[in-house]
Image (cartoon, rainbow, N blue to C red; front, side, top):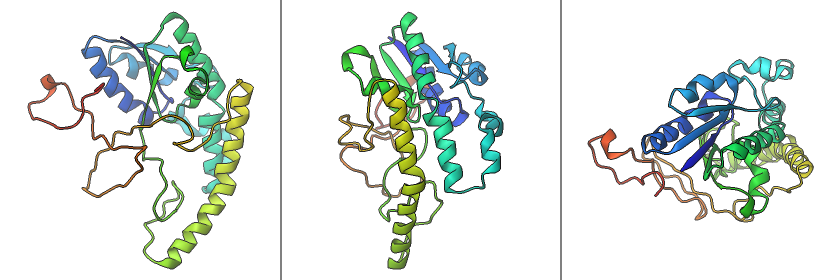
Length: 253
């Protein structure tokens, strides 16, 4: 099969995809990697062919201050997070989408595997299914799912243990939604509209596609998710890579 790996040009987003790409190449599949020029050697290092993202998405996130210089003048907090999300993940959508189309013209991939913050696939997911290959998004960070105490993600808040904390977190979440989520959603949908698709509804059920996350527990704790987000466990290596048995699902099962 022909596999196109598409990654935000950041090491933490790319590394899990490289592991998947390494397995696929070892199984005889042809793999092309689409990301920033700064990560060319990492992609070519697993034996994949490298393709650079077009200007506008070819960021050097190893030097974050240079990639998003306006953040230098914004103190840490919700406004900083909003600008970072918009510049790195939303404003890059048109160029990411252009890069995907350019690669697919001469490399008709059977599957695109991307990190789950590579939003350049959204125009394809929101468009006709017949005009795109299969798309698999790999979670490379925490599960972006509502906390039971309703605290917003990325706020660094410990689990609520009292009713007073629950009420406090509800107020924080409301402000987080006003300052970050709503402006980002508006900007995202403007970008998608310019590409002739959308709007994107941030709801896993109404988005019409079943999402499967590969989760594994590092501390044995229970993490409850909805039926639309079944926990599969870690991907198992090929039998030749290790001697111990495993009940985790094999990649591609």
